[in-house]
Structures are given as C-alpha cells and as structure tokens.
Amino acid sequence: MGLLEKKRPAQGARRTSNGSNGRRRRKQAQVIAFANQKGGVAKTTTTLNLAAAFQEAGHRVLCVDMDPQGNLTMSQGIDPDAVEVSMYDVLVHHVSIRDCIAQQEVDVACASIDLAGAEIAMSTQIGRERSLEKALDEVREEYEFVCIDTPPSLGLLTINALTAARAVIVPVQCEYLSMRGLVQLQNTLAMIKENLNPDVEIAGILPTLVDSRTVHAKEAIELLEENFGDQVFASRIRKTVRFAEAPVKGMSVLKYDPDGKAAYAYRQLAREVLGVDG
Image (cartoon, rainbow, N blue to C red; front, side, top):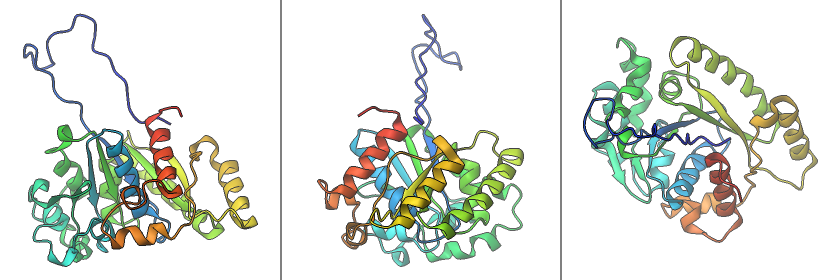
C-alpha cells in the first residue's frame, strides 16, 4: 500500500523538462485526504498522528484543517477563534495558503469557525471544487506529504479535499453503523474520479477505536476485510485515553506519549503507507 513512487531519472539525463542545466524541480507532495462523512471515527486523530509519524521518519509534512470545528488546529495548541487568516480566506478570498500556515509540531494550515460559511460563499465561484487544489500549488514543492482533515460530511469542503488528493484514507470505527457510510463515500469518490480527479484512489481503510475485548469489534473487522479485502490496513488503532489527553496539551500522541501503544500504532501505519517493512 506504499504511496511513495520511487522513480529514477533516465540514465544520463542532465536536463530538466524546462531545459535548464543541472537544475531539477523538487518532487511534489503526495496529497492525502482523510475522509468519512460519519463523525467520531478518529479522522482528526489519524490525520495529525500519521502526519507526525511521517515527520518523525524524516519527511516534510503539511496538515490542512478543512473542518469548521477546527479540531486539528486546536490539537496543535492553536485557538481557531484567534486565527487571523484561515482556510476560509484561502478558499473564499484566494489568500495565499502560506498566510494561514502555523509552524507547530507539524505545519498546520489553520481552520476557523468561518469555514462553516465557506460552502455558501463559494457557491457562485466558477471552479469552486478546485479551490484547494489551486491553493496547494503554491507549496507542493515544499512538502513531501500534505494531510487534509475533512469535515464529517460530503459537502463542498470534502469535495475540495478529494479533488486535491491523490490518495484517500478512510478511518472507520469498528461498528456496523459506521461502516454503512463507506458505500456513500465510494459513490461520491466515483463521481469525483469521473468529473474532477481521475487519479484519486482509496489508499486504505483504517479500523479505528478498536476494542478488541468485544465480539462486535472483531466481527466488524471481519466484515470490513470480507467486503474490502486488501484495501483494509493491517494496522489497528485501538481505544485509549491518550487520544483524548494529547490534544489538551496541544500535541500529537507521538510527542505526548512516545513510547505508548497509541504512538506505536501510528508509526506502524506510517510504515504501511510508506511501504516500509518492519
């Protein structure tokens, strides 16, 4: 399930596509959207902690908070109500995305409550589904990964994320009702592939909030694997109070409890996404 493409330049090649001698364009970022229209499935938790695991492994990472609740922004110790420039300004007023990036444990393009009105404000814009994609063009060569947290809906903000992304990770709580929403997400993704972004794919489905003590959780994972096969990540994100404690301190669980099981689980997921053994 590795997302990194290992491309080697043609043997003997010395010129870039623009004809410049010895100068190469930096590889552009892999853009990953984290999506599930159901709330409470550890979407924000996964966005931040996988990004932190990427960064710990030596990669340059940007997190983009597209959720009006601003939980990702708050999880890095930033008050969304105090943000002067947010993703709302980027999407609606076409302000540079650089202006809303805060350099914390990971770089975060911050959200504010104003985002709740973005879909209405963008409704008359031509090409509104590509607003985020265009905004990211400015920083694609500065990062290796862009991780986009989306709201619990399949509205215009999520569509922007899916249009900008190459890969989608779907966190799914191991409960029957949570898994039913996967079909709706797949239908939305199919429409986006057909009309907006033919390259986007589901990179994997991630079982979250797993309580291995219950029969229901085990049956839910079996049902996921039965229906989605190898699209289901081998990594499992288990329930732990650490996921509630870390955001209060404004940090990822990898920084808050680096030797804990929760941090280990996201490091394992990072290796799985990167296609690294061990």
